[in-house]
Image (cartoon, rainbow, N blue to C red; front, side, top):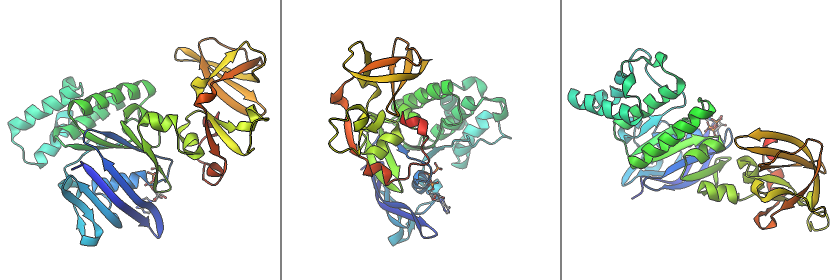
Length: 349
Ligand SMILES: Nc1ncnc2c1ncn2[C@@H]1O[C@H](COP(=O)(O)OP(=O)(O)OP(=O)(O)O)[C@@H](O)[C@H]1O
């Protein structure tokens, strides 16, 4: 049996469908992320899994345990599910020190004092916070608070942990570091994890599998590589910022059979060449990021972004070589019919 099986989960608020027939199988030991734009229903789905919200229809199983079935009036309360939780805002008690915060779930479960002491010590060691046991949460940085929140989730030894945007309040370096530590802990302890985020980078950093949600439905699911290499349609390509999405006729006016077709060109498929007969474009931006240059060029009003070790001069006309084997094609209808207003335009380059 799987740690989590959702069959046809549906949920409406005030007559508005928020989740529509969600089917999901979560494998043991998988780190799964529910990813999607604001309002797509991901938090509602996580709250249903947690038991904080009841579905209107469908069933939810944890291995052989039926957690929810509205038809049978079945709904297991959150504390009966024995899942761990890690929240975006840490959810620590300010009046308790770190050790007491981590011990709290064990005290509720009436575990013996000696065992609480041992398990709190172990959980704090697991998250590299063993030297901070006596501190109050106010004396900790955001990253340290989130480590304590993870220790508190681990201490009860749940098989399944639910994460609500665990990295979103942290700066870029801390996100990277804590992201790696969360993955290490999940692997070492054989945890199954469900995470919710609107941030594709956080999803990439943490996940074995990503479920892309759109308008309360599963739009696409797969490994991060599958999603980012082969988005199912132009909407997914744009939301994931999976590469350069533009009209085919911009680059090859003579070839484009259907002028409304969009193509997705991976950033790694573009390079500047000295060959004059290739596509010409004008450099509009060149920034040094990480250990390479991010180049943005403009061609007939559309932008392409790619990376290279050498810089390029702004205003310069360059010739581009594009590996056409890596291009995906989409019908424009797929994108224009969908709401994309909440996706920043700069992500399209
Ligand atoms: N308790 C509630 N009562 C009424 N409407 C709700 C309730 N909870 C959520 N909604 C609505 O359901 C829709 C989905 O909300 P949800 O919080 O699941 O989206 P989300 O994808 O997590 O978005 P965000 O990233 O902004 O948190 C939204 O339109 C929201 O306003």
